[in-house]
Image (cartoon, rainbow, N blue to C red; front, side, top):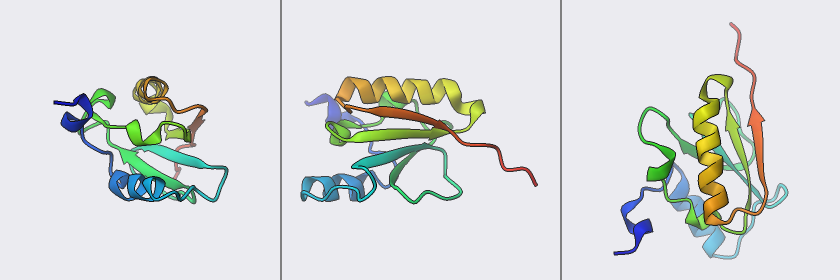
Length: 106
């Protein structure tokens, strides 16, 4: 059995994968955001990985091969975000940017 068949897509992964497979590309810089936890606001095409649910090694990111990505995270999730970055490198995302978003102060 193919390894990717055992992995789960991140939240919104099915929709993003379908769009990419249809030949569509994100309007903003051909970039997909990989958000670590649910973002407050994200204008980019994005998927969501939840640290509390599974490790980065359990997500199928193969649909992001050839697509630039931004790993969107908060400082307290930096180690997890670095592990997500390593997975994206492994699957062939050509450009991976790290964006540490500020905490929301109330």
